[in-house]
Length: 174
Image (cartoon, rainbow, N blue to C red; front, side, top):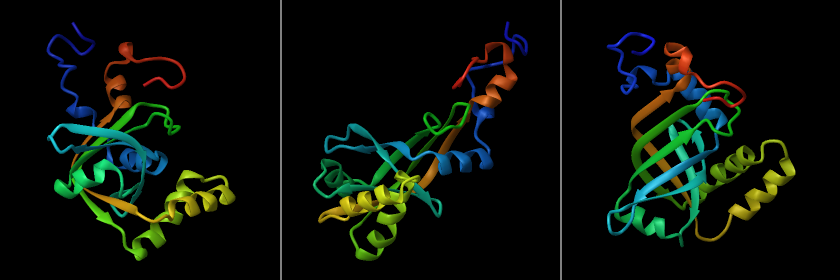
């Protein structure tokens, strides 16, 4: 028997989705995600990379020499998974998005993206941010724009409110 009675289904977590404010906080505070695409054999591949979220889209970067770029040119369908781990948010939150990846190599996009991205990755040190920007502004640099289409969100605080006896305790409890 669960805390809410024998009919409570704790496997169905749809009620514990992130609300708009919590989603916004996660996307403002987190700079790391898992970026997932399909390899040439169709098998999913993923890497952990940094991102910024601007104007409802995810923005990442990679060299045009990365194997994932050839895969993205063949099939731009991607997923992004974001968690609250390391963001300073005290409860476990996660988001997964399905979307389409657009590749940019134009100067106009690089000119706004590189400094913005560098400041987000080195927020407390303008000198390091400028050095990182100089490092990123290299030949073959691409900006990846992920246009989200479908979203799955999870907020553990909602689940633990519904099941306080099962809630974790201590710092970083999710």
